[in-house]
Image (cartoon, rainbow, N blue to C red; front, side):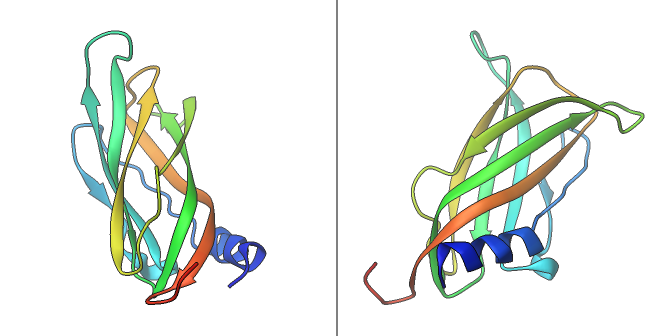
Length: 127
């Protein structure tokens, strides 16, 4: 799968999540083969909050350069902030990889989307 066709799959498989910040959230892979599970954690200085979790890859293809977009929303579902992040390293075929996105502020809900990724190789193949 080329990077361009992988991008098309990513566009079709964008994962949107909204939930209270204290709960762990997961979206089933109904729309595609990548899914995100996450929660918000309070930290010490200099970053006060972070959204952390895992991207799960249910496909037989290893992916890399997974880009995440987070939209923070208030109780009226209006966007009050956004953040961008990456999954560091590859997400193995039929596996998962950890990510963390620093947040400037806490919110009532979050939308977390996978906006792009690159396919590396099928399970068992060299890159």
